[in-house]
Figure 1 (tube, protein in one colour):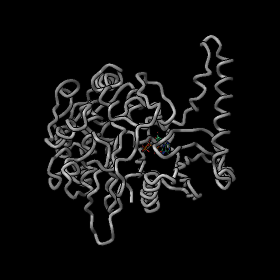
Figure 2: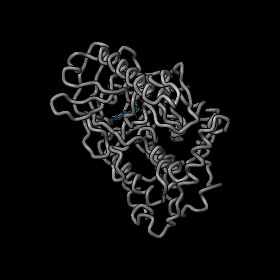
Figure 3: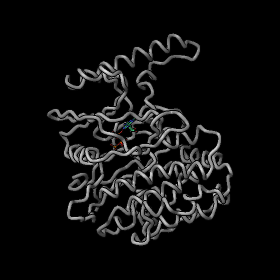
Length: 392
Ligand SMILES: Nc1ncnc2c1ncn2[C@@H]1O[C@H](COP(=O)(O)OP(=O)(O)OP(=O)(O)O)[C@@H](O)[C@H]1O
């Protein structure tokens, strides 16, 4: 199941692009308008005409999508907008006709082996879980070459879009986010489920409000442990920048790989940069295997030692010594909500580093492009989109 039998999955899609600007677009989870109208858009001086053209283009695209949907689905749900595209999927915002409630529908192409496997993985997890920080499955429709997965709709956008748009971001804010993610992970791990593709793009805010919870999404590479308590996995998969060293060294591994990825996410969350980065994947993997990262440059002098200790205990090469989700929740940095730590505003440095990544000529931006694929959404800070089924 999942990436179990794939050779290298997720081919580079034509038209993939890395956008140097920060505007929100399709696929940020923000349920923004369809993007096709952009080409039709005229000059700023003709707002009325431009908006009408955009609206017309959106309506046309929605109509095209509606036509592609199974009539059983459209009988119950009104297809309203395209949210984003995955390698084998499209996600649309819908309204349930009877209740008028909004939902997301992920339409997965199952005619392709990799799509079928990702779909099986995703469903095998979503059908088992119920947790406030994990996207909730509503119902499933199966057609011959497609599966429609109706889910909770996340309208609050991706993690980093929000950090950029808010004025302040402190260690305390990071802890509030991390607690929700770790809580979801602890629950998954208690069910012997390993996400295997934890990264910022798969963490969505439920709603745009400041108090919104975070939802863990995208279980296309997840592994559900078997009933015999066999937790160990062998398949080499994940997104390069987040892959744990034990996966790279082809050892049997456990859900500790999610905790490694959490360490990478925490590092990004507090700095806007990646702990392990290289445009060449072989060199990147060497860096991960050595476990060498540093706290040089801004904003690290302003980050507390407790926060760095939290990261160090996650980016621990020996998975047996790496913190578990339960231990992460009990780490003094998290327990004290960074009360003894600096309350310094890290937002400017984080945004600066994120923007450096987005700059088309920067090395980190080239690195992001190198590891990016099937990038159909408008989110700029793509932290290695290129999923790997197996590589060898
Ligand atoms: N429940 C949801 N609510 C709102 N947006 C969602 C939801 N599920 C997915 N999305 C968004 O839809 C887009 C496509 O998601 P999807 O999981 O199909 O592919 P992906 O993870 O981006 O790519 P890949 O298939 O390569 O993993 C993403 O931008 C994602 O943030």
